[in-house]
Image 1 (spheres, rainbow, N blue to C red):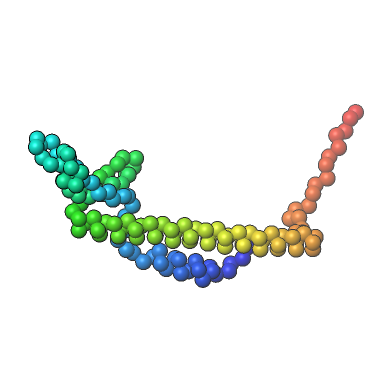
Image 2 (cartoon, one colour):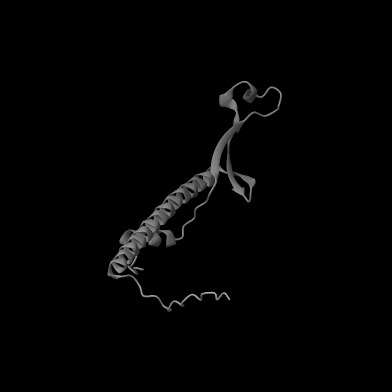
Amino acid sequence: MDNAPPPTRLRHLAAELAEAKPMRRGSLSERTIKCSKPGCACADDPKARHGPYFSLTRAVQGKTHSRFLTAEQAAVARQQIEAGHQSRSQLDAYWEGCEDWADRELEGSATASAREAEKGGSTPTSKRKSSRKSRRC
C-alpha cells in the first residue's frame, strides 16, 4: 500500500472545511397572507396582502420544524443557508478527491501485485502435508 501524502487539493479542501462558520440546512420562504377581517383590501387585491412574513423550515428526525423570522433575520438566514450549500459542495468535492486518491492507491497495489506475480509470487508460509491414502484390507 502506498503511503503517499494527500494531494494538495485535498489539503486545501480540508483546511476550508475546518474553518467554522455559521451555516444551516433548510429553506427560507417569503409569504404574504389574506386576513379574515371583513372589508379588508387584502381579500381582493394581492398587492394589499399582509406581510411579507419569512419562514425558516427544516426537517429534523423526519419532522418539519418551522419558525417565523423578521426581515433582518431572514437576510442573515439566507446567507447561512448559502454557506451551508457551499460547505456541502466542498464536502462532496473532498469525498470525490479522497476516492480518486484511494483508486490511485489501489491501482498502485495492483501494479505491485502484478510485479510480484511475474517474479513468482509469494512463497507459501507452510509446507503441504501429503494426503493419506486409505488402507483397504
